[in-house]
Image (tube, rainbow, N blue to C red; front, side):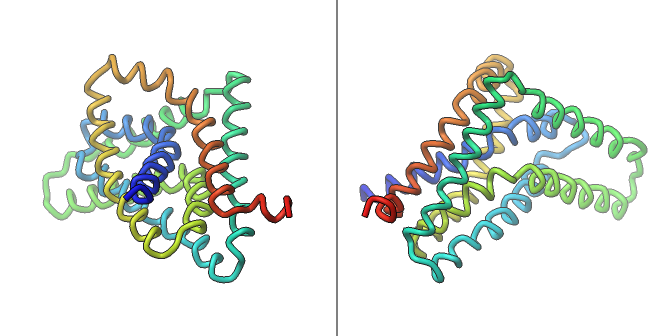
Length: 222
């Protein structure tokens, strides 16, 4: 039972830490009245699923390499965390704002001229929006792959299945949390203020966990 609770905690931390930056992008989608909430959620699911499938390559490598060597990949989230920490110290916080501006501009262009009432035209519009959201999620998922790959490689098959299922459940939970924040300015300000500050440290701790779990330090200590 304790092992399940620990795995659940790591899974939640991994998911949240790699989707904090995506929070503001999804918030832009949910704030746009031309985007149906279901459409945004479906697009997010498609994008996250692709990222998870790519990250599962790490589990395949586990079958070919000793687990201690796999743990070296735990350096990836540590490096990503340090990179974000350096950017934060240098006050380089414009990347997320630029993503939101770009996303809003693209959404405005997609929204123009979409007043046709024919059912088949509406379906094409919805499908294109789902595809667009999936592409945005995937293109913004570099950190996801960098964190998920070593994490998956450190798990056995049952743990991997459990983690993937939890990730898929948390996609829906995450989307509804964002909807809540979009509708609540006070909590949104708090999240925006402290989310980026905690993000690098969470990634660094996650990388350390992966290295310790795989006993990678034993390669150098012994």
